[in-house]
Structures are given as C-alpha cells and as structure tokens.
Image (cartoon, rainbow, N blue to C red; front, side):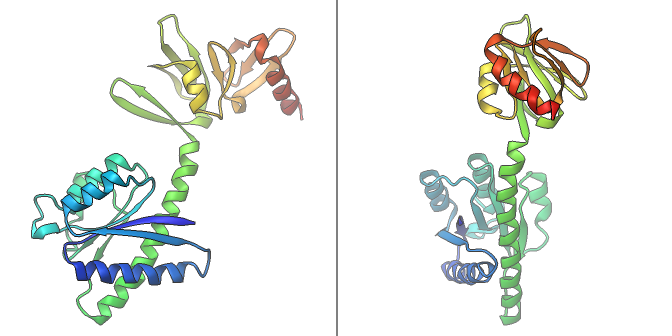
Length: 259
C-alpha cells in the first residue's frame, strides 16, 4: 500500500536527513507488509501551503517542524497543521521540534498530533530519532486504516452549525416529520431531530435500508417483520409500515431473521 508523506522543515539538510530516514523506515516496515512512501517536502510555510493546495492529500502523513522560519508565533508548524486539518480530515500530524515542551499549544489548538519527535543533536540521538520515526509512522498508518473502518460505522448529521456523530448500531430508524425536510432519528437513547432527506441519507449510509419514502431502518434493530400486513416492529416496540416496493427486500430480510 502507498502512503503520502509530506515533510516541512526550514533546514534543507534536515529535510534531506528525514527523507533518508523515511526510506530506511519503509524498508523496516516492509519486512512485515509491503508498503511504499510517496514523499514530498517544503522548507517554509508559504511553499508548503501552496504545494498542499495544489496536491490535496486524503489520509496523508505530515512531518512538520514547529519552528518554521525561527518564529513560533507566526506561520509556524502549528499554523500549517491547522491548515492541513481543514482540508485532510484523515491527516496524521507528526511534529518535529527542538522543544519537547510545546505540546500544550497543540492541545489548546485541538491539533491532535500522532507524536512529537525531538530533533537529534548527536549520533545517539539520531538512532533514537530513527527508531521513534519508524514506530510513529506505523501508528499513523494504523490510524489511517482504522479511520476508514470507524467512518463506516458512524452516522453524521447536522444540527444547526454543529456536526454530530452516532454509532450506526445505535440507530433504530429515521423517519420524516410533518415539517418539510425535517427528520427524526429514533435511537437507543431517545430521539433527535435534524434537517435532511431520506434519499440523501439512504445514499450516504449503506448500513441503513430504505423501507419507504418516509423511513430508513437499521436492519440490526428490526425485531419482527409482518409481510402480509407490510409492517416492521423494531426492538423498542415501535411499528412502522413498509412500502410495496420494499417487499422483496423485506422478504429477504425476513428469511435472514428466521434463521
């Protein structure tokens, strides 16, 4: 599998050194499973931003020097990480720094880096840096893979300007309301209302099935299917009608439930 890596450090020699170590890390990690790193780099904030605007990553690994341009308070690695997080939601940020005590700033800015790695000062530090880099890259790769899995299990919906998430397994069903474009989600903890359309969420959430023009159901939370009466009973006791067009789908589901 190929992973996109981006290195940004204001010292070109440091960039070259990190790129070499990434090559070594690729060899070490590939002993267990074949991977490849596609590496790009920049030496300042503006150059990095321009490159990443033209080459948008989806699940990139970013090794960023915090002190870009010798300034910690303007166009630094934190600022670059903030920009990256806005355009790559799967971004794996790794800060490379001469100061091990800057983690609080990252926490306050909600940047959620994978790791902080302190720059090596001698050959012994250099070996430790390489070992830490290998371990960190493995964590970043695992995070990217797990993100896809978690994303599939999560239902996203918007309330006002806020995006909320719920585990799909907790959803019982989603149905329309008398208010146009307003939906109600019935879940194991209660009910939530939000704006959207059944067709929209039917396309986005393949784990939910459309049983009528007004209802999306979670098949895992269906308790009974009454085929002659075109009715579904959910685990919470609610009963909802399904449409004639969904009959074959419900018949197939009925057969699975009976097994």
